[in-house]
Length: 452
Image (cartoon, rainbow, N blue to C red; front, side):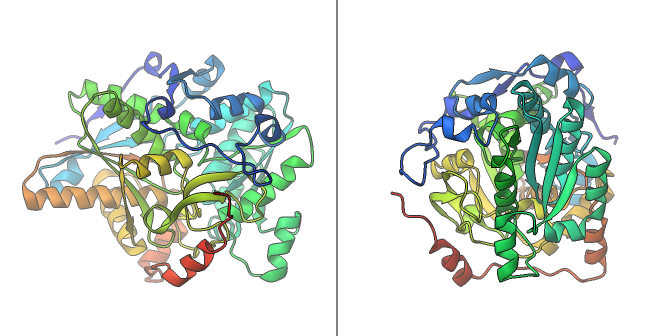
């Protein structure tokens, strides 16, 4: 049986992003100014972010128009394909139907391009000359380098050191697109020097890289900071994934019972899940929404819902989220894009209100299932995306045992063509599972700021 691909034409690319804030029963708590304990004033944030992005960040409008220049650029790779995984279904012997939205068709090879183009456009419109950012596995840094090249912006990327060492080809692609890549922690910022003074061999974290990028940005009024996940406006931009999936499944005369996404900071999960949760909140079909995170960085499953800093150096506003503590530095697992200490505030709010569930998966299970998926479907997935694959396959196996015929949808957020080192390490037997010790989590959580 052939594999089906449901395609929308360019005119079907959504004209508006979806903002879940408009439909949530309880609003997401605002960011706080640590010095006052009060909601952060937009004027203070304008030293870091483009003004128009802050307007999106604080909006409660259900739909926000996508600027036409952004839609025109996205026509290169959107709408992204929705596949029915018929060969995988057959191999698993499951009565379940498995669909996946494949974001690896973008120029950066992942969903990150969706927000990168929007953020670069808004920064250009606001007169920004240079942007700084962090990146874990490199997908976001690649995407922002590409987007900045389109709009003529300088781009500096602080890349988590362990990923910088594991993924040299990501650095090469960023530089092809014109981005400057710096391993983090670095000797070029106060935050980086402070970390290196304590631990010269520090493997880095997204929290450290964010500190460096923010510090770099605030030094120059013509420089702004861009974030690839976590914040409301980033999740807003990614909603194009789920909006397209809604239309594509309608064309297939189907609707998911289960929606699955990998969770690091939360952007690809929100992108696939939020439009469906919105439909449910407005009286539509109830869906089982599952966020999947690595056992080595379990913010949703073992973190605390509290106000915390978004970075190690404590330069960001306080945000209410499920967090492991801003001082938390996870092990150097190969899912570099999921090594963040906190979860997006909107996703944390969705979880707190019982609109989704969360689980962890171990590294060896992720690679085992990624390889089975690749052999069945012909797509080599990124390790981050493979967390969603593993959970989807578990749900399909469960359907095989119970005889239930459920429809499963997951977000395949990027390809793994630049993650071959991780796969070679797996085949060589050099990878292992890792459960983050409870006492170390407790130690990191003990440093949470007191603001409530």
